[in-house]
Image (cartoon, rainbow, N blue to C red; front, side, top):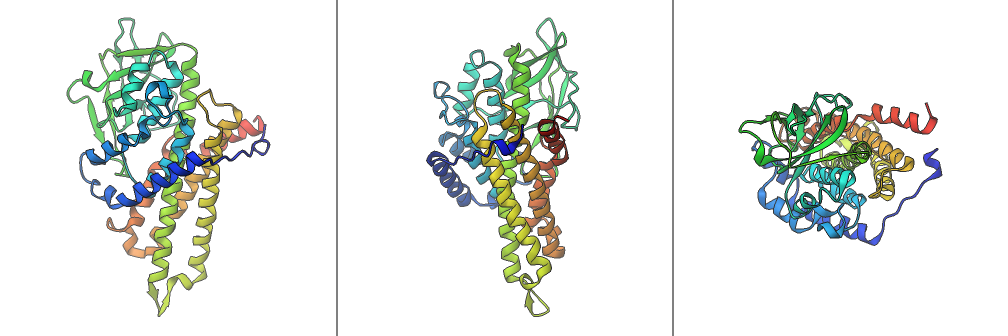
Length: 372
């Protein structure tokens, strides 16, 4: 199996229209929208979420009979790329992934909740039990009486979500337990401070909570694998947009800042890294849209898995390098809170850990491509 055997890259009219609309919408909001909420309890304004709901973005990956658009989860890539350009933080990413996990786990059983999500109720997946995204340890249990016991770490958008899809085990078998935030005890959610404050997370205690829905059976393991791969892809899409915006910030500075009587953009030591970032952004964009072409509502096949791994590995390294260069080129100002370069490098540090870093995904690629 080799990715050279599948180089499909489809960008149809619907995706182009969605990308144009999403870019215009996000550009009109600008990066100041993220800045306004860097030190507030929520990373977004309620009216912004209402606009996102009205545009139908929560239902992008859901079929029409559940209130979605039926475009497939691949259509979320241009939206997340556009949001990444302005570091727009909302529960959209976590909600899309939670709905995919439910859809792939048991669409019929989760119908009512999926309809609620499509109509505007935020959701998230509570998976981690340590700070290590690669840990597969599962200590959260669903007892024979139907109660959860355990605590989850770094749950994305925990404070903003109505629904929690909790990974757990019942008698050694993986299950998905869907919890309504209204059933949590007071103080069950403890906010966590992240390096990137345009995204939020919290630790959540589920001790003694009775889920509204339990999904079990053979599809759960496959759904969890696809959730991790799709999570890597959508974070890669955000990274690609952020890296492109970071490059714009770099170029604008190189064109205006003078040193020793010359524009600093005239020095090859700064030109060459800028060109490297441009090439890396183009590569990242090719990878994310290749993956978007291959992912479907069905369990991901080998080509789709390879594409998601490649997208995350490339986009992670691209944003890390772009953020690092942006701070360096801006000098001392790049380390200040008021400089956008600081926000991009913080997003890079956060994003590289989400759903595995570049080294992890390349290790996965070695297994898939080389049967290592």
